[in-house]
Image 1 (spheres, rainbow, N blue to C red):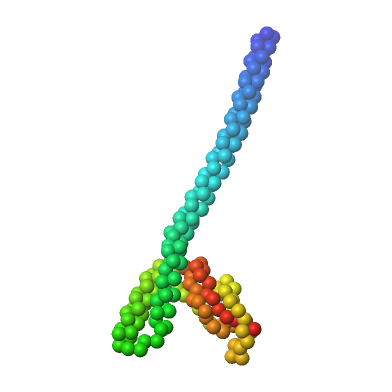
Image 2 (image 1 turned 135 degrees about the horizontal axis):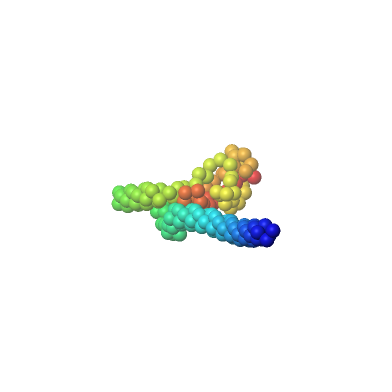
Length: 169
């Protein structure tokens, strides 16, 4: 009988050892799962940050020259004002032609960098136009643009200067 007791004791000990090993394995498996989850979350967060930074980089590249373009709009306005002056003699006509050529070149360069004038015809759009005042007009429906006071410009899809207009009552 002592052999049976020894076998039982050995089996009990083997079962306890297996239970301890299973418990330790379960503990290690839980730690592994927790670390794997942490890794996957950190990796996903890293990918999100990477995508966000890429979008910001693209946006910064697109709109990097916005301030410079805004400053050039004053030059465009001055050149347009110079062209609107009535030329009386041949010299004045030549100067006016030179100013027109300079303006055309400047507008082409601005357009190359995605700066385009805002249309100021038709219905008033508060996202694109700035109403300076309302006027009575028999020729225009209420809420439509009557007169353009200052051109507005957009760079890509962003307004860099609203068009200043008068609007029909």
